[in-house]
Image (cartoon, rainbow, N blue to C red; front, side):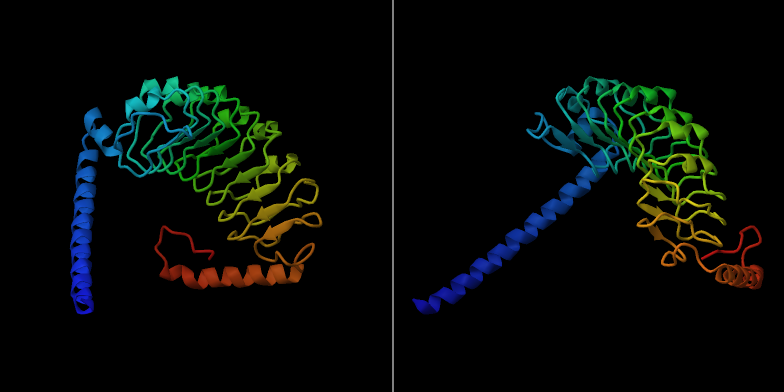
Length: 307
C-alpha cells in the first residue's frame, strides 16, 4: 500500500495544478471583463465593477481605488455614516450630487483621476479633515472650498496650478499643505493667516526666490522647496518651530542658515551654520562654466540643466 501513496500524491498535485491554472485563467478573464465593462459609464456597469457592495462596512470605510471607474456608484452615497471614502486611481471627472448625503465623511481621496475642476458637492462635506486631490488636472479651486473649515490636510500636488488659490488661505485649521509638482512661481501673502500650518511641501515648482511669506510663519515645522530654481536662501534661523528644511536640487549658492537642531537637506547641509563663501563662489563659477560648455549640445529652447 505504501507503493500506491506516491502515484496518488502525484495525481493530487497534478489536479491541484490544473485547478489552480483554471482559477488563474478565470481571474484573468474576470479582470479583462471588468476592464472592458469599466469603460461603459452606465450605472449598472459601474456597479458590476465594484462588486457586491450593498451594505456599509463595519469600519465605515469604502475603498474603490484602482477600479477604472468612470462614475462613482451612487448607492455608495446611501451609506450616510461613512467616514472614509477612497476613489483614487480611477477615471473620474465628476461626482454625483448624492455625495452630499455623506455629511459624516472625514477623509475623501480623489487623487489620480481626471478632474479638471473640483466638483462643488465636495465643498458641502463640512466634516472633511483630509482631502486628497493630487494628480488631476486642476487649474484652480472653487471659493466654496472655504466652507470646509475642519480641513486639516490638503493635497493638491501634480496638478496644473500656476498660483496657489487664495481660498487655501481661508482654511484656518490647515496643518499640512502639499502643493508640489505644479507651476507655482510665488505664494500669496495671505498664507501667513494659516497659523495652524505646520508642514508645507512645494517641491517641483517654478520658484526662483524663497517665498517671502514663509519668513513670517514661525510656526512652520517642515518646509520643502526641493527641485525649484532658487539661487539664494535667506536666513531661517528666526523660525523658532522649524525642524526640517529641504532645499536640494536648487541652483543655490548658499545654504539657508537655521537654528541649532534644525535638519537641512541639500547642498552644504552638513556645514554649520553656513558653507564657506569661497566654496560657494567656486561652485557657482564651475557650474556656470559647465552650463556654457554644455549649452550648444542642448535643444535651442531648453535652458541648460542644473543637475
